[in-house]
Length: 199
Image (cartoon, rainbow, N blue to C red; front, side):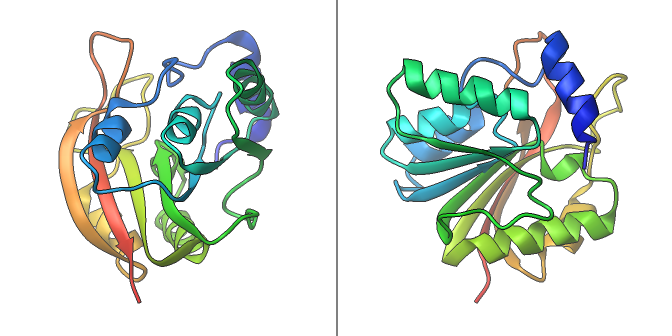
Protein backbone atom coordinates (compact mmCIF):
# COMPACT_ATOMS: atom_id res chain seq x y z
CA UNK A 1 0.00 0.00 0.00
CA UNK A 2 1.01 3.69 -0.15
CA UNK A 3 3.77 4.41 2.34
CA UNK A 4 2.32 6.02 5.46
CA UNK A 5 5.03 8.74 5.59
CA UNK A 6 4.27 9.86 2.03
CA UNK A 7 0.55 9.92 2.73
CA UNK A 8 1.04 11.94 5.93
CA UNK A 9 3.15 14.45 4.01
CA UNK A 10 0.43 14.87 1.37
CA UNK A 11 -2.25 15.44 4.02
CA UNK A 12 0.03 17.90 5.84
CA UNK A 13 0.57 19.88 2.61
CA UNK A 14 -3.07 19.61 1.50
CA UNK A 15 -2.06 17.71 -1.65
CA UNK A 16 -5.12 15.45 -1.51
CA UNK A 17 -7.15 15.78 -4.73
CA UNK A 18 -9.18 12.71 -3.78
CA UNK A 19 -10.62 14.61 -0.79
CA UNK A 20 -13.66 16.29 -2.36
CA UNK A 21 -15.44 17.45 0.80
CA UNK A 22 -18.53 15.27 0.33
CA UNK A 23 -19.62 11.66 -0.02
CA UNK A 24 -18.86 10.24 -3.47
CA UNK A 25 -21.94 10.49 -5.68
CA UNK A 26 -21.53 6.85 -6.75
CA UNK A 27 -22.02 5.77 -3.13
CA UNK A 28 -24.93 8.16 -2.64
CA UNK A 29 -26.71 6.81 -5.72
CA UNK A 30 -26.16 3.20 -4.65
CA UNK A 31 -27.60 3.74 -1.17
CA UNK A 32 -30.48 5.96 -2.31
CA UNK A 33 -31.55 3.38 -4.90
CA UNK A 34 -31.64 0.86 -2.00
CA UNK A 35 -29.43 -2.00 -3.17
CA UNK A 36 -27.82 -1.32 0.23
CA UNK A 37 -29.85 -0.75 3.40
CA UNK A 38 -28.63 0.60 6.72
CA UNK A 39 -26.39 -1.86 8.55
CA UNK A 40 -22.96 -2.08 10.17
CA UNK A 41 -20.56 -0.60 7.58
CA UNK A 42 -16.82 -0.19 7.04
CA UNK A 43 -15.23 2.57 4.93
CA UNK A 44 -11.69 1.51 3.93
CA UNK A 45 -9.38 4.42 3.09
CA UNK A 46 -11.94 6.82 4.56
CA UNK A 47 -9.67 9.88 4.34
CA UNK A 48 -11.17 12.80 6.23
CA UNK A 49 -14.42 10.92 6.62
CA UNK A 50 -16.99 12.47 4.29
CA UNK A 51 -18.41 9.22 2.89
CA UNK A 52 -18.35 7.51 6.31
CA UNK A 53 -20.13 10.45 7.94
CA UNK A 54 -22.73 10.52 5.16
CA UNK A 55 -23.43 6.82 5.71
CA UNK A 56 -23.74 7.42 9.45
CA UNK A 57 -26.28 10.18 8.74
CA UNK A 58 -28.31 7.53 6.88
CA UNK A 59 -28.46 5.30 9.98
CA UNK A 60 -25.50 3.06 9.15
CA UNK A 61 -23.25 2.08 12.09
CA UNK A 62 -19.95 3.11 10.52
CA UNK A 63 -16.28 2.48 11.14
CA UNK A 64 -13.80 4.38 8.95
CA UNK A 65 -10.16 3.28 8.62
CA UNK A 66 -7.23 4.98 6.94
CA UNK A 67 -3.43 4.73 6.82
CA UNK A 68 -3.10 8.45 7.59
CA UNK A 69 -3.27 9.55 11.20
CA UNK A 70 -3.79 13.16 10.04
CA UNK A 71 -6.78 12.11 7.95
CA UNK A 72 -8.26 10.23 10.91
CA UNK A 73 -7.80 13.30 13.16
CA UNK A 74 -9.66 15.43 10.61
CA UNK A 75 -12.43 12.81 10.30
CA UNK A 76 -12.90 12.67 14.08
CA UNK A 77 -13.08 16.48 14.22
CA UNK A 78 -15.77 16.49 11.51
CA UNK A 79 -17.73 13.89 13.48
CA UNK A 80 -17.48 15.98 16.66
CA UNK A 81 -18.56 19.17 14.91
CA UNK A 82 -21.46 17.41 13.22
CA UNK A 83 -22.35 15.45 16.37
CA UNK A 84 -22.40 12.30 14.23
CA UNK A 85 -21.71 8.91 15.81
CA UNK A 86 -18.97 7.39 13.67
CA UNK A 87 -15.81 5.48 14.69
CA UNK A 88 -12.47 6.25 13.00
CA UNK A 89 -9.29 4.18 13.29
CA UNK A 90 -5.78 4.55 11.86
CA UNK A 91 -4.91 1.16 10.34
CA UNK A 92 -3.36 -0.62 7.37
CA UNK A 93 -6.26 -2.74 6.17
CA UNK A 94 -3.97 -5.28 4.50
CA UNK A 95 -2.52 -6.37 7.84
CA UNK A 96 -5.07 -5.28 10.45
CA UNK A 97 -8.26 -6.90 11.72
CA UNK A 98 -10.85 -4.17 12.31
CA UNK A 99 -13.12 -4.15 15.37
CA UNK A 100 -16.92 -4.43 15.07
CA UNK A 101 -16.86 -7.14 12.40
CA UNK A 102 -18.77 -8.67 10.77
CA UNK A 103 -20.00 -5.82 8.62
CA UNK A 104 -22.95 -5.91 6.25
CA UNK A 105 -21.46 -3.37 3.84
CA UNK A 106 -17.90 -2.32 2.97
CA UNK A 107 -16.98 0.67 0.79
CA UNK A 108 -13.67 1.72 -0.67
CA UNK A 109 -13.04 4.62 -3.00
CA UNK A 110 -9.72 4.12 -4.73
CA UNK A 111 -8.10 2.01 -2.02
CA UNK A 112 -8.21 -1.35 -3.82
CA UNK A 113 -6.67 0.10 -7.01
CA UNK A 114 -3.78 1.72 -5.10
CA UNK A 115 -2.16 -1.63 -4.27
CA UNK A 116 1.07 -2.70 -5.92
CA UNK A 117 0.41 -6.19 -7.28
CA UNK A 118 -2.12 -8.87 -8.08
CA UNK A 119 -1.10 -10.64 -4.88
CA UNK A 120 -1.96 -7.55 -2.83
CA UNK A 121 -5.26 -7.12 -4.68
CA UNK A 122 -6.17 -10.71 -3.84
CA UNK A 123 -5.07 -10.29 -0.19
CA UNK A 124 -7.17 -7.13 0.06
CA UNK A 125 -10.23 -8.92 -1.37
CA UNK A 126 -9.70 -11.83 1.03
CA UNK A 127 -9.54 -9.43 4.00
CA UNK A 128 -12.70 -7.66 2.84
CA UNK A 129 -14.45 -11.04 2.75
CA UNK A 130 -13.13 -11.85 6.24
CA UNK A 131 -14.74 -8.67 7.59
CA UNK A 132 -18.13 -9.22 5.91
CA UNK A 133 -21.05 -11.25 7.13
CA UNK A 134 -22.47 -13.98 4.88
CA UNK A 135 -24.05 -12.28 1.86
CA UNK A 136 -22.41 -8.96 2.77
CA UNK A 137 -21.76 -6.38 0.05
CA UNK A 138 -18.54 -4.67 -1.04
CA UNK A 139 -18.74 -1.54 -3.23
CA UNK A 140 -15.39 -0.53 -4.72
CA UNK A 141 -14.61 2.45 -6.96
CA UNK A 142 -11.60 1.47 -9.08
CA UNK A 143 -9.78 3.64 -11.63
CA UNK A 144 -10.31 2.11 -15.07
CA UNK A 145 -7.56 0.88 -17.39
CA UNK A 146 -9.94 1.59 -20.29
CA UNK A 147 -8.99 5.27 -19.97
CA UNK A 148 -5.51 6.68 -20.74
CA UNK A 149 -3.13 6.93 -17.80
CA UNK A 150 -2.91 10.43 -16.35
CA UNK A 151 0.19 11.86 -14.74
CA UNK A 152 -0.39 12.45 -11.95
CA UNK A 153 -3.26 10.05 -11.61
CA UNK A 154 -4.31 6.95 -9.73
CA UNK A 155 -3.25 3.42 -10.69
CA UNK A 156 -5.73 1.79 -13.05
CA UNK A 157 -7.08 -1.76 -13.26
CA UNK A 158 -8.71 -3.78 -16.01
CA UNK A 159 -11.86 -5.86 -15.61
CA UNK A 160 -9.70 -8.97 -15.86
CA UNK A 161 -7.43 -7.83 -13.03
CA UNK A 162 -10.43 -7.06 -10.82
CA UNK A 163 -12.17 -10.37 -11.54
CA UNK A 164 -9.00 -12.40 -10.97
CA UNK A 165 -8.45 -10.84 -7.55
CA UNK A 166 -12.01 -11.00 -6.23
CA UNK A 167 -13.47 -14.15 -7.82
CA UNK A 168 -12.40 -16.61 -5.11
CA UNK A 169 -14.25 -14.58 -2.48
CA UNK A 170 -16.97 -12.56 -4.24
CA UNK A 171 -19.70 -12.72 -6.82
CA UNK A 172 -19.67 -9.56 -8.93
CA UNK A 173 -23.25 -8.26 -8.96
CA UNK A 174 -22.58 -5.24 -11.16
CA UNK A 175 -19.58 -3.63 -12.83
CA UNK A 176 -20.40 -0.28 -14.40
CA UNK A 177 -18.17 2.23 -16.13
CA UNK A 178 -18.37 5.71 -14.66
CA UNK A 179 -16.33 8.49 -13.06
CA UNK A 180 -14.90 9.08 -9.62
CA UNK A 181 -16.68 12.04 -8.08
CA UNK A 182 -14.31 14.98 -8.33
CA UNK A 183 -13.95 18.74 -7.98
CA UNK A 184 -11.93 18.73 -11.21
CA UNK A 185 -13.49 19.33 -14.66
CA UNK A 186 -11.90 16.08 -15.93
CA UNK A 187 -12.81 13.34 -13.42
CA UNK A 188 -11.07 9.97 -13.52
CA UNK A 189 -12.84 7.11 -15.31
CA UNK A 190 -13.62 4.28 -12.94
CA UNK A 191 -15.33 0.96 -12.46
CA UNK A 192 -18.14 1.01 -9.92
CA UNK A 193 -18.06 -2.59 -8.75
CA UNK A 194 -20.69 -4.06 -6.41
CA UNK A 195 -19.85 -7.52 -5.06
CA UNK A 196 -21.45 -10.03 -2.70
CA UNK A 197 -19.45 -12.32 -0.42
CA UNK A 198 -19.55 -15.94 -1.55
CA UNK A 199 -20.79 -18.69 0.76
